[in-house]
Amino acid sequence: MSFTTLGLREELLKAIKELGFEKPMPIQQKGIPPLLKGEQDFIGLAQTGTGKTGAYGLALLQRLDLDNPKPQVAVICPTRELCLQIADDLRGFAKHLPRVTVVPIYGGASIVQQLHQLHRGAQIVVATPGRLLDMIKRKAANLSKVSCVVLDEADEMLNMGFKEDLDAILESMPKEKRTWLFSATMARGVAEIAKHYLSNPLEVTVGGKNQSAENITHVCHVLHEKHRYQGLKRIIDFAPEIYGLVFCRTRSETQAVAEDLMQDGYLAETLHGDLSQAQRDSVMRKFRQKTIRILVATDVAARGLDVDDITHVIHYRLPDDAAIYTHRSGRTARAGKSGMSIALVNLREIYRINEMEKRSNIVFQRRKIPNGKAICEKQLFSLVEKIVQTDAGSAEIEEYLPAVMETLSAFDKKDLIKRFVSAEFTRFLDYYRHAGDINVDFRSERSDRGDRSDSPRYPSRNERSYSSARPPARSHRAPESENSQRFMLRFSGRMNHVNKGAIIRMVCEKSGIASQLITGMDLQQDHALFSVDKRVATQVLKSVQHAKLDGKTVQIEAVMDEKASHKRHPRD
Image: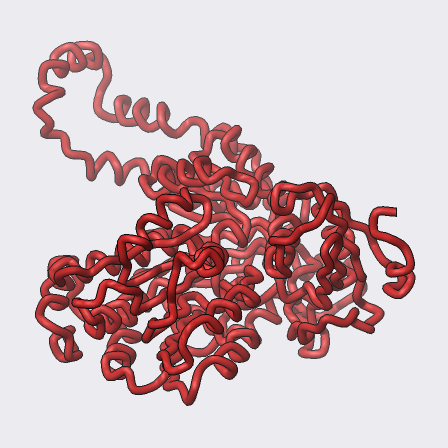
């Protein structure tokens, strides 16, 4: 099938050809024809990097009234990076259409400039939820005549705590609009949004619901906790051409791992929520230019990150939720390419791999971390291949060759090769010369515990991880489960502009937990109450204490009895 069979206008087909796209991807083949008709709401489920932007973007542009300069379409997405990427893609598709204006609206940039852009006119508004809601409240973004709204990466927006913002934005739009929802997973919150805001939608699924892309190889390495960082370095060294993402759970761990990698000579940088927008832009620019090859990130900071050609996603720590694992791994193997997703786990975390296999319909290959000999061999042949592929015909070096040849004339061919290889390769030989095996021997470990089974035992369906289990329903009441811990978050002064979503995002970013683990949020003017699973309670308490929210410091404390907590003023 080609794009010409989908019913697109000539101007769009010309742009597609100039952009180098030859055949539509599956989500485009299945999605574009019904989207062009626009007769009903739409749900598109496909992994990141599978062409979702092209599917809805081409259909939106064809349906635009080019003579109407007012907002006709709103595309809502989770992050600044994705917002800018979508806007650029739409402009690229529309390059041969007259009078098409696309305006990106996102936080971290000048709001004055964005106000001017909206005032001048925008047929398509691409926005992050928080900034768009701000523009609506300022009456700068008038979406009362919008005929179509796209929710891109809807599951990501819910994971980031944007549900309240999305509810308010969608309520401000006309009821007769068309709503197109695109997501990598059909998480429960996404299903609730679809049920509430979509009417009799057509659902198109590419791959499978909550399923990882088929061209990703999933690998699990089991090691002792003390060898986790050493295992990470071996994985990186075994992939000489790696261009990868390393995911950690918390900001502090992200910073520490990145600093250790940089100190050990790797081209690495960190990406987390405490970076300023200028710092974040600088890191992403270097990563896209491949000046750095390893980006160590938290889930919150990397959401919506859109970078092509990523070869490896390494899970230094597994996420709480299987859906988050799907999003992480989806950063590789984009646009039909292959990639690898590698999880590092200790003995107590093995059962979580089993749980993710069941929930996400994937299979992890249990592999051993390469030993020193294998790594040195891989690096050596990578070096040899580089030499073979190097163009030796450059005219610039000709004038230097006589002096070089004279200097090296005393050595024969074999000796020269040995010396050149050694000059580049000695550091790996020195480092790994006495490196031991850091893999866990399952049989030995089980034997030490009195388990004589011949094969590794993985837990049954009943032995579930709290972090991968189905999250409890959101409630404004304190959960009654004895497995929950209630917290009070005190504000230094009134927080008139902070909503529940902002608090959830702050807690997730600081502690590294998934938003689904936060329940029972009760927001007051000078404090908030919420609950988390007891097994992450200490982590939340330590990481959120003295955090910043809306520029102000917050205090957090455990609440043993919610009724007792209301008997005193939060500042007492």
